[in-house]
Image 1 (tube, protein in one colour):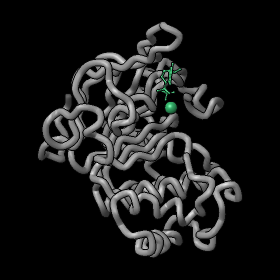
Image 2 (cartoon, protein in one colour):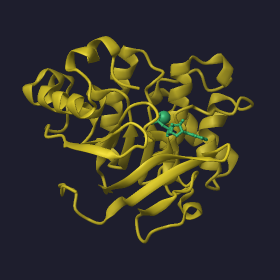
Image 3 (cartoon, helix red, strand yellow):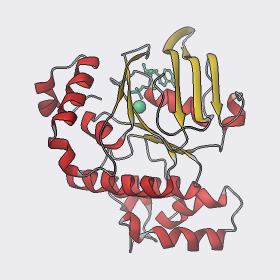
Image 4 (cartoon, protein in one colour):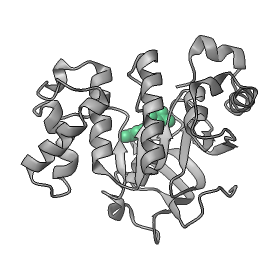
Length: 272
Ligand SMILES: Nc1ncnc2c1ncn2[C@@H]1O[C@H](COP(=O)(O)OP(=O)(O)O)[C@@H](O)[C@H]1O
Ligand SMILES: [Mg+2]
């Protein structure tokens, strides 16, 4: 594991983690031999083909799904899966907003589950609505919101949980290109200010490089780490970095690791 500039004990450490699903009596190996660490304040992106176990990995770290082997440690000593619940803020791939709660009610939930009284939770959540581009939509029902807006509500809810470890599963997947770029810049700003440790799943190579300190590449199923790219781009990052030679080199190494032709990315828009 390459050392990184943010010393201190790792916020997250995985050691030889594997995972499998049992379906119809058959065992399907989803992840194998996964070992890496994320330091306090470090931003790591996870990229890999569809079905490579990215969401499974986040489910394991968050405590929603048990690993089959290996150890997972958030902060101190290795925890059994149930002890990891609530230690991270997790935005799942599907937004999972409660249809019977308004946008504001859904966002406030992050605080309510941590014991903040409902009234106060609503007030604190409402304060963040404008910054998330959601002003005026506080009382909208999830069914009335666009996919992009639902994703921003889910993102706001995740940020309100305010854990030192953030798990984001394709948080901008439902956004159009312009909104996506705006949200990336804004996530970086937020991260620069608050320095959470982040593990972000994306299918977008450029997004991974633009945001992360390191990009971990998974193979197709069973997901194993095939490459770790340390991103040597100065921070704070500006959009113009996407046109730099250094960015291009990162991109072509990652495309190689993913086994895709560089040219095909423009057409396919990344990998899923
Ligand atoms: N609940 C489940 N039961 C059985 N197999 C599953 C389940 N969830 C995921 N899988 C399988 O595990 C593999 C990894 O899935 P997933 O973690 O969702 O991959 P990714 O997020 O990288 O697309 C896939 O082959 C998927 O079909
Ligand atoms: Mg997934």
